Length: 259
Ligand SMILES: [Zn+2]
Image 1: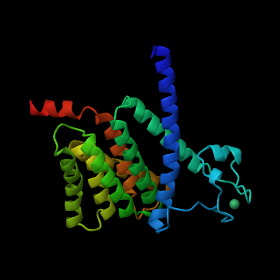
Image 2: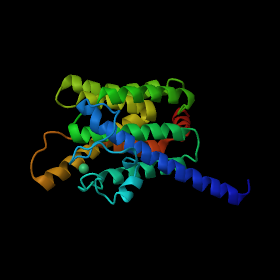
Image 3: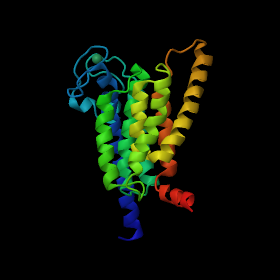
């Protein structure tokens, strides 16, 4: 391949990755909306207004929104822009991840990780629930991916990550049951699998800071005390940032420490 062909190939790859990301965003939106309410994730979505079951081409990300001009096919009530925006957002995250990781195999791990963080952000924000039914499959897929695509040369690294994510919050929970939700503790264990022990500890700190900032902002805006701090989205944002900053550089970091 000459340089021109290479660039065309890369451009197509990134477009495909973007479309894949939008489809994943569309699917995991449904998971985040439905699983906490114990609904099945099989079966098509319904229009919120007329409850009519959507046709298959109504759920193609972005495409269907533009064809339907933002209105329900059956009752013409407005479809919010929220879902298409989130789908495009996940598409962009997939694309930027593929770019930063230069299409190495680690890209697969990053896609899984983005889907996990996205799903739990939706369900935690809407219902203050991080379902086991979401965490467990991602934990198993993450284990498998980290076995074939390790983050470090040390085989115990993902296990240390799980422990570093789980233990600090577990101890806090033991001391004060109301301080932290069980879902957050389990989520951090899964996050540790993906980003390793150092990442998990930094993320623990950063997400607490973010959660306090979220809390203060909502307090100022609504001027009332919130019952819940949605810790999930704060964990998602901080873990994603740390993942992007550290992926591929972990071994260099460890070598620096072991000198
Ligand atoms: Zn409708």
